Image (cartoon, rainbow, N blue to C red):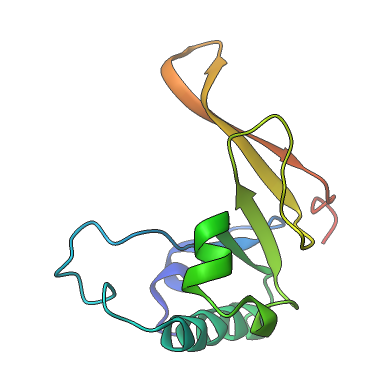
Length: 126
């Protein structure tokens, strides 16, 4: 495949999902900034299906605004989700496998803020 991510993980034993991180464009002139939710969803599905055809588990990483406003979530129910919401507990009315609950975590040996996540699915044997 000529998909950038697949070229870069070739030769590694990947058990966790291959994740598409979908967030705001860095600039209003970015080529993705003016896409419709339908177009974004089409591209997201194309990515996920290529990842799946290559033998990996596709996953989408988004916050609630992106899942509910910027994508057509009803078309993405078959893909695993990594939900970013910095709150005491998540309020997302759909199934997700990983929850990123803070961007201000601390980890010994790392200076500065660290994203912390909980994974509810055992991907180690896939």
